[in-house]
Length: 262
Image (cartoon, rainbow, N blue to C red; front, top):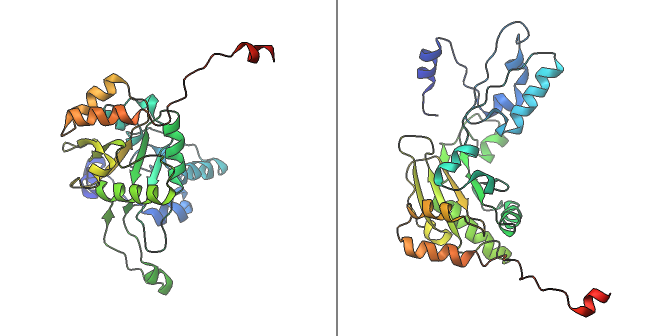
């Protein structure tokens, strides 16, 4: 968040309980306690319905006949338009988690393939590890948490390339154009246009980060905007033009007389 807990308490004039993932996922009773008698505000980063856990909390409140008022918030899901890509040209959003030695999930790959096949851009949300426990500490029941970790653009692109090499069906390639987004909505937000292989060597700086993989269709105004964030504008323009050949529908062939007789 852009403000600390102390700053929020000073602004609202009330004590704020920091609700970590464990509290939100397992402590709904604590959150809803006395909510039928007094106002309880549940503040989130991003839109309230950006997580299924929040939807579940609303359903629990309604089952207990607790009135719920939703105040929508700014979210990466709409603020991503600041990179110049039009929101209605986005497809399914995917999440990229930190790979481990024995866990390298790739279900997101198929969604990128589906998006690009119909010309839609893909927003990739990069992993955040805050107040996470190691497997060893969890097994031993020790409440010891790992230091916070935030995935970088470079690591995300490296993992993208690893899975493409493994799958080999060219949902994207090292030369697929993308745009890196860092610290969106802050005074230090930045964007960088490049191919996935180029961004695998990009120092994106302080978190938070996200990535957009372009669809095979890129409007001329989108491209004009993205070129402002490219180190080599001419090369990036060619990369986008070449990428549009992927998943390009075959040219329409009129039926022959024999076909029309059938």
